[in-house]
Length: 407
Image (tube, rainbow, N blue to C red):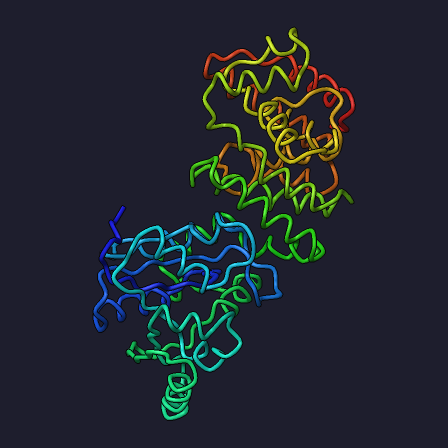
């Protein structure tokens, strides 16, 4: 991690949904032309102005991380993601100054931001804390931009400079539409970002987010930010992928989509707790010593997460907590939400196990019991190959679905 104390930071914030070549070129151009020691790329958490549903934070953070690969003096920050509430640049700047004591901060923006700067939160106070570096976006009229810069400097005491980058008309919204329509955008994003988007099917699955109402969506954003500190980035990406796929399945089975996405986001949040803490929480949740003793160490995190969530977040529905508690093992009396989470954990698009397409097809075609049966068979095969004994809860689940499945 770069030490920011006494450094001149260039702050580049945005949704990065997705991170594309124009984002990367802006960073390169800023480092070449401005007196910056480092550029801090900061995906936002909860947007103050954007009404559309943006991708989950873990996916956007990962695209930014992949997108800057190979660039020196560039760091991706999760400051706004992990900070509760709506993200305002002014408050972010104050946190950066308090935590890192930089010599100066220059906020890097496109020309469209300059033209809308008057709508920013506490804009006069913000301009007293930073300088603004503006790059022309598309074919914006440079004279209009210069006039706006002079007006902004006079009104707020702003310090504004311009820098150049090769012309680009790339916009994240256009790239999302291209992907949703199964178009090719391999020359528009860094190759690693394209591979990530295609593997995780980010934008073909994202329409499910629009099925969640505004209040529930804000709760999901807050939940992801709250759980962020407990797990590594690899685990966050998996959880976001499970959440997105669980939301898709919930939409097909008339299950509360908010619950499915939330369960996906939180299902692994205890997996990196110390093992003894996992065991203590799991024992409290199960309240059944015989059942607790059937769990191997690597299966403690489910009931541990359920107990931690119930203790930390207050009253939660038993169906929701049980789905999380038994997402690894399954059991004989699972709710539809529990089945959805169990399957999403195994067949979300970050997974690469054998026969996943067959299980996905069954689940997406309305054959949930058949999907459970085949998924459990695949798990048993993998465990046998590894010399690991099958948990009794999983065996009980299989007996139910083998007896009730149509195949």
